[in-house]
Image 1: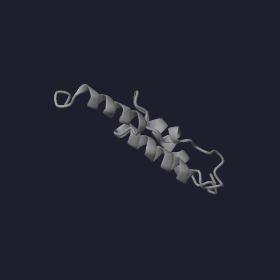
Image 2: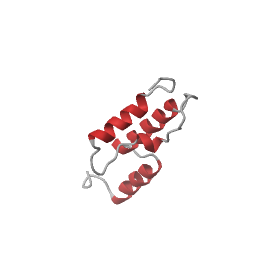
Image 3: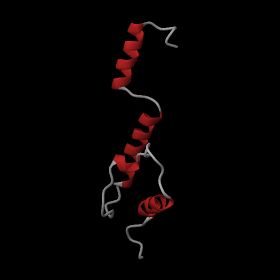
Image 4: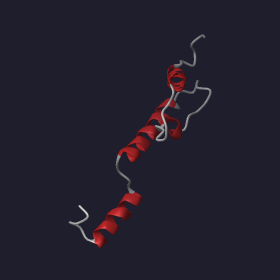
Length: 82
């Protein structure tokens, strides 16, 4: 691709990407914003979550215990008895 476009066109694409990023990371960010908005609509939730709470971690892997804790936190009903 770099052989097919000139430097000026590459600069324009880079500038456009700075304004409107695309790709997996940008998609994850948009999905995280939507997920946080839906999660936070329940007024019974004690703790509001931020989009970054729903972003996948890029470095390292989650342990099984971490995955279970996240699943419990997201699926726990605020009115459920424990």
